[in-house]
Image (cartoon, rainbow, N blue to C red; front, side):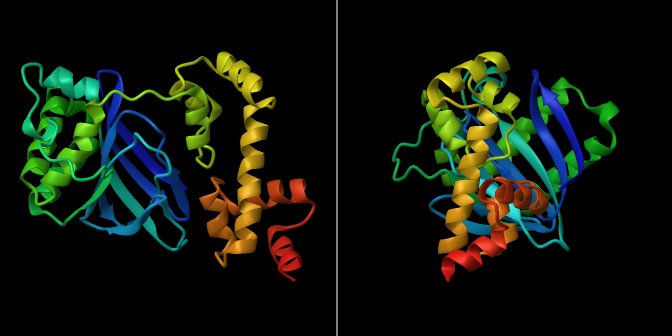
Length: 283
């Protein structure tokens, strides 16, 4: 659940965000040509991909790119809140502010030893002070302007370049400058279990909402809402049988915002509650 949200934009794109979340929550990163730096001010979140998972607690941060699917953060302990600051890196904005030459951090590493896409950043005093500076501007938004935002973006680049995680950050950032295109179907399949709206999926596909729905119907012979909901419920039904996860966790893992919505949708499709479905079929 979202408690509070503030943002500042640069060149028409969301650059810096301050997000206050109340558990349980889940956010799936859409497939896109961008990288994100997420710093935890209070609380913690759990980061998970198809290959790895770990916890990010207060004063630690996560750096990741979004050019592949399956990445999300979540937290299911209902008594906890989580406050994070997010800085987003767009290749076109980076090229624009470094108009003469890209800094070393954005250049392709000499020896690429992996296709690493995320890195946990250790507790760093200078990065902590940097985030405190961002919080000042969130509290005093009238003081923010384009020059300050460019300065803050360059500042976090310098701090990351000096951190002990610099090699991994360089590897992740350099991937943003490798041409990548996605088919319509790849975008849909990559975001099946996310909480993206139809409008957001259309934007990811560079289509208007009406064009997106027409293209979707041609490919899947169904409406986006119905198809995606059924896929989420089918995955949930499978997880109920093969795992011992709590039903609440399964609901969030399958892209539902809350347990009540999941239970109603599941009962409508299978004519039985999730808990009864698990009990019946396991017997």
